[in-house]
Length: 116
Image (cartoon, rainbow, N blue to C red; front, side):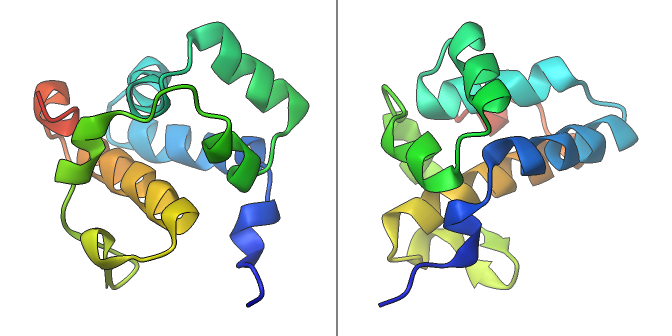
C-alpha cells in the first residue's frame, strides 16, 4: 500500500496554515502551540526544533514522546471523514490535530478542545 503524500510533507509547511486559521478568528499562535504540545507531549523547544528541521508528518507523530490518551475522545468530521473511523494511525493523528485547530477557530473554549 502506498503512503499518503501528506506523510512526507513537512509539518513546518502546514503549521503556518494552522496558525493563520486560528488568528483569522481571533485566536493565537500560542493556543495552536498549546494544542500541539497537548496532543504530542512535546515541549515548546521540541516543537520549535521540529519546525526548524522541517520534520515530515509521519516522523513528527512517530517521534511524539507522549500522545495524549484523551485525544481518542476527539470526534467529528474533517474533510468529510469521521476522525474516529480513520484506520491509519498517522492519518488519524493528523486529523485529530486538524479537528482541534478547527474547534479553536470556531471559538471553542481551550478546556473543551483539550478534552479537560
